Length: 485
Image (tube, rainbow, N blue to C red; front, side):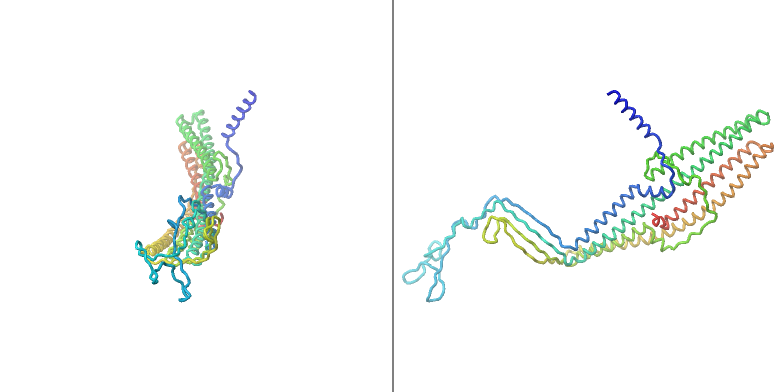
């Protein structure tokens, strides 16, 4: 028993330790990160469930064209029986009179043939009566069972069934466009997280190079101090700069770790996953500034957020027809088989019996104090408002596209300037190092040149990453991302 407990405790510690260790998941390209994010994103999965739901709604709307078959069953318990007579009924009888060739009541007459009336009631006194016992007209209805199978076939519903089918068709397209719009947002977020990691990785390497550069200067100044050609202040100045460089490198290390976690979270992976990116040692590879050419009508047709509005307009236009259908006649054919126990098909019988019936129903709205018409006008107003919204968004999209194009071109111009600055910073640092060794430049001059070199390299990295981010943003605003994913 103790051995089992020890094994269990050791297993627990191993599991805890493994949970704290980062998961090594290999090397990922930008495209693989995008695919993982699209596949694992819960918002996209919710949108896909919405597409499936609208598909089911469309099938349900198609079923409205077909006849509906229903069954209704009822049971009643009645406290009393049904008595059609309060007492025995006594009915006068008639006899055939050959002289008149007709029937006449059998009533009491005087010897001269005069009918005799009852003084109390004023009616004639019959000589013969037919008796209907009260019990013969009493029916046991304590337990009543009834049911009906009905078949209803719509013939004309004022166009509402057709409008409802069109609504579900456009709703499915709307849900698909909404899903694609979410995909665009997710892909853009992945690109931002991806290139942030690449940027921080490049700056981490730059920080390592800068630490090495300053540390080399500290070694040289320390050697010069021992030879008496440098002061203690020069050494302290370099050591302060070295400490600043190490602090910067530590911040970059932490920032890179957090950026990798953010990318893993966007891709749907555990945050402790160590993701090595294929572009960590990237070169921009772009030597000339492209001139993006596009047609705004094509942009409008590709933009999924605009497609959502367009499909919404289609849905609202069909709702107008749905509201119009409330003011039109409705015709349906109805067939039924009804049965009950007790039944009256052949007298009163305490068993199930029934029969078929076929008919048609017509409902014609006549006057509702303008309620249906005002509802129709409200749906028409909603459609017009949606059309105006689409026009307004198209104008904003045009401005957004132009801004994205300018930003993309500006990123290339910035990159070209950073390359020029980088060349100047390299030459400045080389000159400062040579001048320092020859004694014509001070430690301050070298540190200033190193700082300028660091800034130039950092700006170049930012410019290179900016090109990629501006490119994906341009793809997003002109709707290209939906074509890829």
